[in-house]
Picture 1 (cartoon, each protein chain N blue to C red):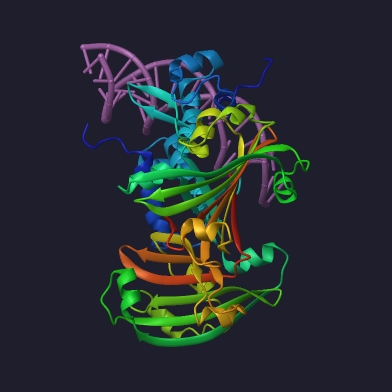
Picture 2: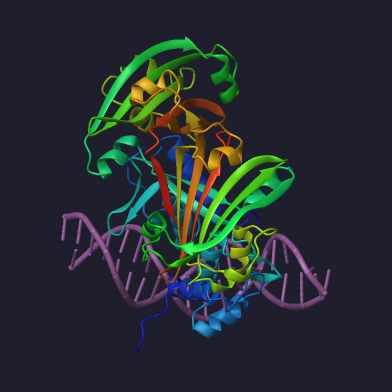
Length: 232
Length: 232
DNA sequence: GAGTGGTCTAGACCACTCA
DNA sequence: GAGTGGTCTAGACCACTCC
């Protein structure tokens, strides 16, 4: 035996290289798995693994009978990690602080009910919190928790543990929707974040469900210095 | 034969269900692949495929010798599709229009050079464009193209084809970095988008390289109605 | 050292889709 | 109908990591 057995990652990288240098132009067909397997001296399963990876990232499109081809419009996908605020802050080496600004049990207002597709007036726990990085406001959190879905939350005092952390540990979810957008700092957000009213803020909104039942809705507001970054 | 052979997706879904209903709590260990294979009446490779999928989505963590365990902090990953503006607009059924606002060849200013990690003053094509959806401003594009990396761009008149579309078809890239953030509309952006100066805008910034050489830097500015949405 | 996941192989059958 | 990808199997060896 001389060389190490070829890995599916090697094959993937080589295929990716050929696409990058236009050896296979966009729209052009790739050789079949069998052919490539022979070329690389690997089994078809290994080639398949490599090509599945490329397909999953949108670099190639695969169809039975038709074969594989380089995507015309590389539907590039960006992947963002969505960590807990605390982790996010501590990972930068900064000190994390948390404070609960308000806590009340109320019927869901129209806006919240509509967003979660439930009846207006359902009992909810409404929390307002602030997360700080090195004593500076990092994120203002406005959260609604369905007491129908998570009744235990009613007994919890969120003064020392953030609702996100508590929910992660106590309430599983099956589906989530996440949205990013820019907005003007509201009369609640601006003072909490120490910004002038109407400043641009970066907002992340998240909704989660378990088996169709809404669990929580949260609006996370960041100062305009905040960036969400990813590499492709 | 009675039942269809079990699929790795079936196994994945079943494992995911057990995690969702806390049959396996966060932090708890999962059975080994061999055990699960026996339970499901499948081969270890099939179970492996299912578990790899869960691991890729951050639901479980896997370690040799230690085994697999349910993630304590489900490091949920969000995946966003990054389409061409035109596609993005036309997919909503809206009419797409494009206009070139300015085109000039200049040395890279300090800010751009720093961002791309190149020498200041390198020759760049600087374009300013506007993309409209149903006649309304949708995205203001401020783009820098390295003429060293893409010399053909110098001959191209971008009055009818957007630089993004042209680049996708003519300039491959190997690495890209993408960032989202909120900002206040600048003196260039505000009038182009028909917004008051200083309005909150949603900005996407993208840098691409081919084999270490910078190709293009683009800042895409959207009105505050813009949302980037994803489902997990 | 030993257990668990990571990966490869060779062969097989199936399912989708194009012609 | 036939070609190509999708997937499963059974067995094997390797690599990492914990003890």
